Image 1 (spheres, one colour):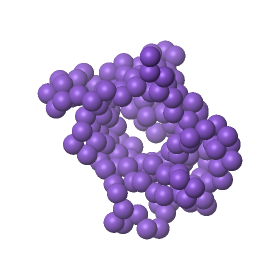
Image 2 (cartoon, one colour):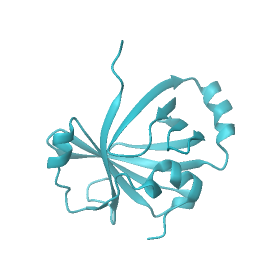
Image 3 (cartoon, one colour):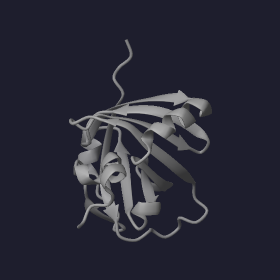
Image 4 (cartoon, helix red, strand yellow):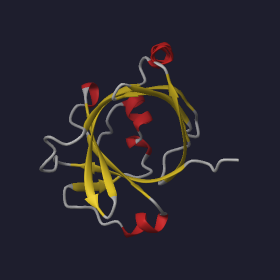
Length: 160
């Protein structure tokens, strides 16, 4: 039996984009939520760089179970229709942080225009605990349900 896929990730707000984003890798992401449980479990579809997936995730937090299943374009389009009113659009920039870590910097579009967040995934809880964010990374919002993408898709950007 395969082990459960677990991610260890922290999320932060970003006040201003870091220098050097131009010319780096950036992908447009379209994400729609099919189901969101009262406990925060979610089922979503996503299209990124021409690839589509169906994903099931546990509730937001530093450690989450995540299963991602590739789907074809026909299935994506069919399921996308079911996510009306529960969608986000963003551009994701990958920013190297050193020590083998990469920041996923999300620049949101449409109703969420102006919101900037960054997520950093870690190989262990110990590595997560030792992480010192660079100066361009702002306040931590890991586990704050208002900043979960599912909440952003349903309720918009939180009032700070």
